Amino acid sequence: MATKITEECINCGACEPECPNGAITQGDDIYVINASLCTECVGFHDEEACAAVCPVDCCIQDPDNIETEEALYGRLATIHPGKEFPALAALPASLSRFRK
Ligand code: SF4
Ligand code: SF4
Image 1 (cartoon, rainbow, N blue to C red):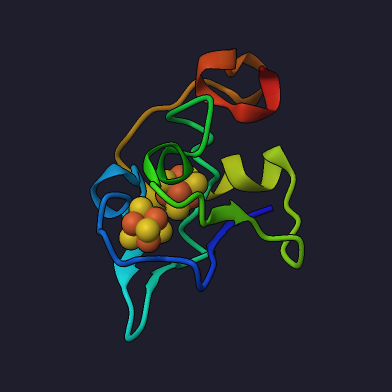
Image 2 (image 1 turned 180 degrees about the vertical axis):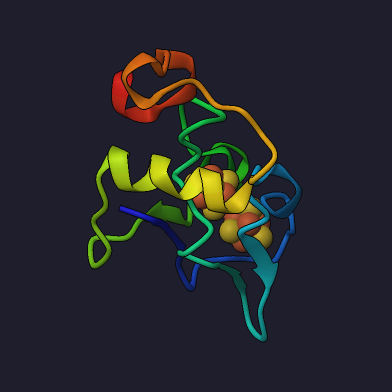
């Protein structure tokens, strides 16, 4: 599931610089996540970095946008064309919340 930000957002801005994919921006009312850039932090962290810093726990998994680890991993090459990532089969637990 791509991560989404709920209306509970207090616009603190803490999450934006934490996203390794630049998926978070300030919207008209609350901060928003571009789902096409969100990998649920697969490839970078073992948890969602935005959720880890959010003081009001409003970065949640979007039940309307369920995605597999494979789909999320596949997004990395598009977002970071010059960066090398471990192969999906060899992805360590430290780089995917799916492997904890
Ligand atoms: S889960 Fe990770 S990749 Fe997705 S928006 Fe949050 S920090 Fe960015
Ligand atoms: S950390 Fe949470 S409350 Fe702060 S801007 Fe991001 S989603 Fe909103």
